[in-house]
Length: 245
Image 1 (cartoon, rainbow, N blue to C red):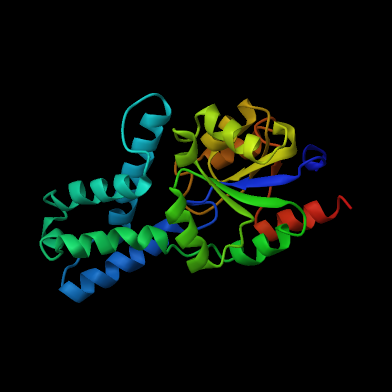
Image 2: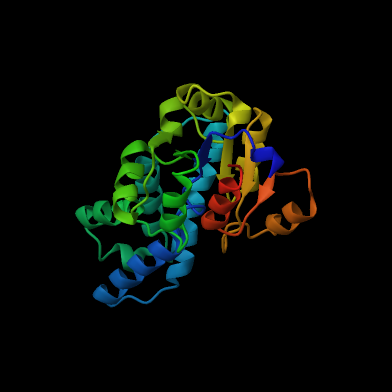
């Protein structure tokens, strides 16, 4: 609690932290598979698609080249997947227009159950904003779909890189006219929290199903120095911040 006493803004990772991207995508491709009479491991499809995004953003964050639009990145990854033997039967059923439409599922991801009520409660305690690797239009559409009441939307796209590049965190802090210690990063991913902490931000870890498959959450809980606070939900975080008054 002491680490959050002077926090005026909460910056949120979105994919995995606020929204259940795996579940949302799995449900959509399963629906399409049934529509076209194709069976498949749709959960694996979702994970593979998401893995392409993670690998590309991390590569660019560390100096590599590539598009700064996650929409473009997702579409390229989808195209590559549907050309593989595993997914070609599914891909053969989808026109280019259908593939473009499927790509927009990333704009319509469902929030975790605590996301919307928790964010509305948190708005009463601090500025709440995205700080996501997702592009701005994607984040806007997602907010409308899932009723995510952000005060403002900040995207790595605006800062010419991806998290955990320090320039992304520092760029967001500058736009909020705050000092790093007055901002907290809320995320389900240790790399993101470490990136935020490296520039002086406070850190809030929230475990989400499937977001740390290598057991990072266990390590995080055991290491008291890794984050300022661990919460189980956004509503719990709101209750903690309310006690500052």
